[in-house]
Length: 236
RNA sequence: GGUAUCGCCC
Image (spheres, rainbow, N blue to C red):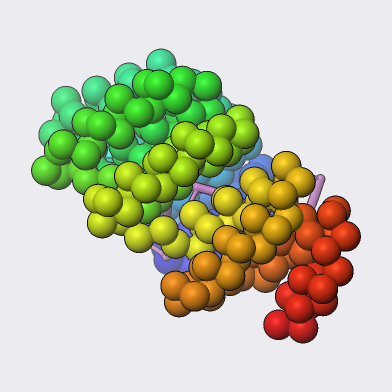
């Protein structure tokens, strides 16, 4: 079953959702699927926007004595959220709680993201506040990065910097993604030197810049003909 | 062997 599951996952990652589904069907002739293989399939179906089939898994799983667990729900909630199905997100959050499965920081981070992608940052902030005062679902760097990205996508740099400060105060360290978000923002809006400064700060703080950090920063600097800095980054 | 943030791909 592990081998089948790995292969199904591989097909999904190779944009072969139909083949992945076929292999799942074939596997069922020899092995009873388990919760992990159901989750892998769930993700593939959702990524292919086949939400009706994905939800159909709820009816098939009991036949194999499988019950949805926290990872299954989190996967579903995240994909529904990315698709902007906020109402469905709420529904399954309630459903999992009703089954005694408590939403964790991953669940809440996906909820925050769903509100951000549907342009409800104010509501996302309400959820973030709830997380901050909670004991069980303290926001982490992922959660804050999600909000920062939402602000930067709308070119609200002041607000994004506010969230950055807030996460630092709360003991969440900005990571590679946090810095890349700001590097991309400054590069996109034509402030290549600011991007460069962020990259420098990241390195100084001991976070290794990724190939992407350099590429985006170089792009921003080139737009402004900052040749010396570009050459310096290429050399590095 | 399964879940959330940038980039990458599209």
